[in-house]
Length: 328
Figure 1 (cartoon, one colour):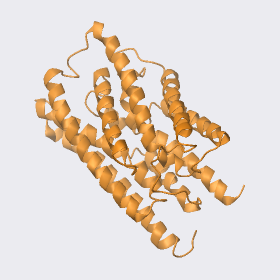
Figure 2 (cartoon, rainbow, N blue to C red):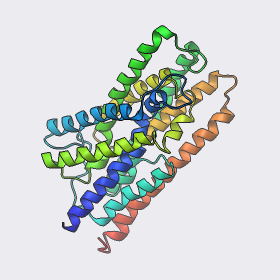
Figure 3 (tube, one colour):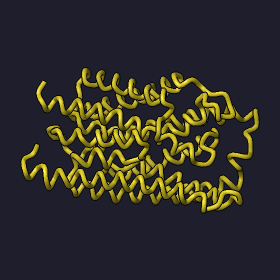
Figure 4 (spheres, helix red, strand yellow):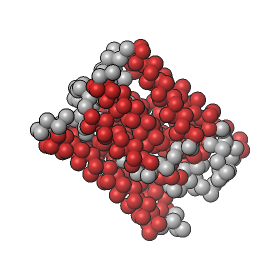
């Protein structure tokens, strides 16, 4: 095996695990929280294997459907402005850094951290602008929606009537499947960037097995450390909250997917959504004021900035140190 192929495979495997463990929790976190058999849940849940197999079915459909309709390209056009490059050792270091940050629970932007190793500074700048807009728009939309929702329903205090529980449960699963597909069509690019743009069936079978295994491990850990960011937000274990979060998040991602083909940080959009939701709840709830909310929002924001700083550091090192000095 030549070094280029080795770096490609290693980079892909590291990226696949890191993306699944870090970013997929944005999508599956609320669903895992309200459907798992966790002792803190008020309703009977499902075994992690059931949730894993369900998520795997949507993942495989999205993966193979994207491959089929895009002529072997699984990135859904997100890499149109980042052409395929010969994978070097420094490309594989980006998902390794992401893996380390994921293990300590930092919700970094995979798009910035992984794609920065391949993208030009011009493309990275456009990614940053789009992601900032995504964070702000998600926060504003979530704040507006939950101001209305909280006036009608206290998601935590008002219990779902027994006759309505089945509808909310089905809604939770349906919106999660919709969001999972939408998110994958965005962030599959963060993994596909290591691979040829037209993949063979053999490559696809290998990729499918890797995804199934890593997704299974993530569910076995019930989302891992990144899941704590979801659980510390108000009422995310409740099925109504999870369903509403999924639906709003999915439509925001759909909007940006259709807007242009520049990759963006879905992590920033998700954190912005939770930020707007928490601010809306604290606006209306007397016993949940801003002094409790701002430390949570501040921690999430600082972690996002840490990931951005690391990403910028990687791209600057590659373009101004490694490449000019032929260290590749």
